[in-house]
Length: 159
Image 1 (cartoon, one colour):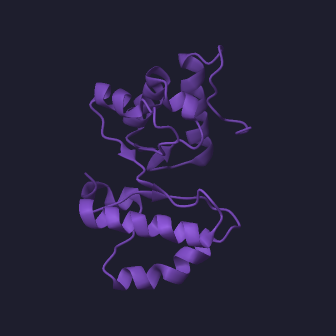
Image 2: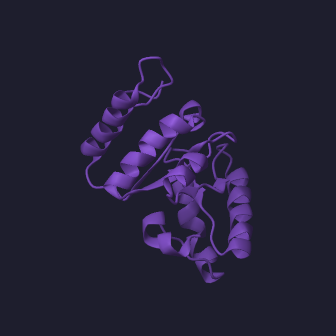
């Protein structure tokens, strides 16, 4: 269960309800630069529902990051219909809790960055040690010439 404040693929999830949920979530958090979906595959596969979320992003001047929790994401379609730019995740770092697996994903991401000029990697804040893994290796990657940033700071560099 994603808990309260989730947009669910239920019959009663109409336009007003979806917009109210997103607006209430934003009000509870306060000032944000962007939002993303976590879980939500059934919603992001729906261009109509995704579009309602994107409408709010446009109106609030915040970005949307598609976590690509499904290969069938309709968010790019909904964004194109609105003339909006969205961001899409390239690498999901911690599909497993194995540090070796996480390092492989990060290294894969760094190769994408070499090729594209940037990479968008996401992961979880959980007690499996991703934060420590990143902290322990940060200087090494920085010394190799990689720059790490948030999307809100690097947005113009991301195509």
